Amino acid sequence: MIYRNKCFQLFMHLVVLFLALACIIPFLLLFSSSITSESSLTVNGYSLIPGEISLAAYDFLWTTKDSILRAYGMSFLITATGTAANLILTFLFAYPLSRKDLPGRRFISFFLFFTMLFNGGFVSTYLIYSNVFHINDTLAAMIVPYLLMNAFYVIMVRTYIMSNVPDEVLEAARIDGSNEFQNLIRIVIPMSRPILATVALMSAIGYWNNWTNGVYFITTRTDLYGIQNFLNSVMNNVTALSSHSTGLSNAQQFPSVSIRMALAVIAVIPVLIAYPFFQKSFVKGITIGSVKG
Image (cartoon, rainbow, N blue to C red; front, top):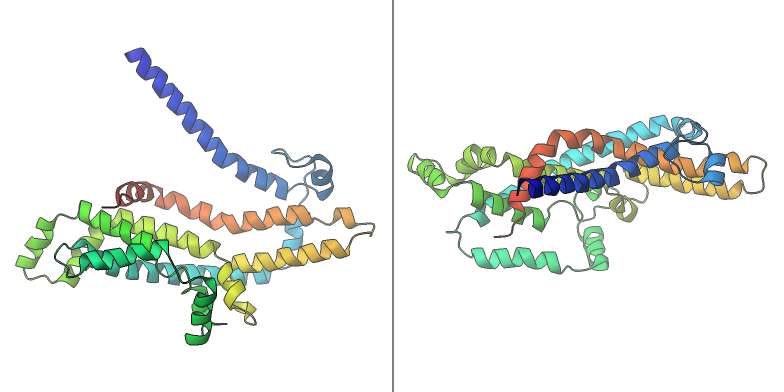
């Protein structure tokens, strides 16, 4: 029996090691390709060890450092504002649903779940945001559409509260004169920090990686571009420059491929820095709150 347990543990360690390498190697390959010369990438392809180190891609991006810093600032503003609004709306929706004495609780829960399966479609959604709410070329266009609140997050938070906040604690608080809003602020939110961190991280990643809102709703105010939209425009410019340089003597030296890799490295760095701080709470919150009850 002991031998079997050790074999099973060894097997599971090997599986975890394989999964870890499957996550780490693509990032290493991405960074290695970003510091590899264009000629080496063209001849030898991608490699974990750069065949010929070159910082031409980062030198090219350095020429746009002011625009990159501005886009970073907009991304931080959009992510912080959108994540805070997402958390507030999610908890204000989830907490009432977690109370069994809420009138119409089953209908509201069904209505919430229904939105996860069906929506009005892209065209109708775009027309409502553009012609009714008039959010084109505004900061709200980068925050509100598609990202402001997620039904799945509401279900996660509701399930977490029902599983980890005892009704006896809330009832004792009511006896002491606490109302529902005070229960939410003083009891539910402090006891829900793991799911709070989970929703915050998932929402922040969604806002940070989002570029479709900028494509759909930003037409003239390019100063509202976040880092993803700015890097997308840079990549389009690089593609145009690369195509126009065909036939020139330095065409193969233009770092069109390595620039794409450098763009991805720049975009992913903040997420890699932030994730370790949320990892412990994220694992606990996602495992407890993801079971629909």
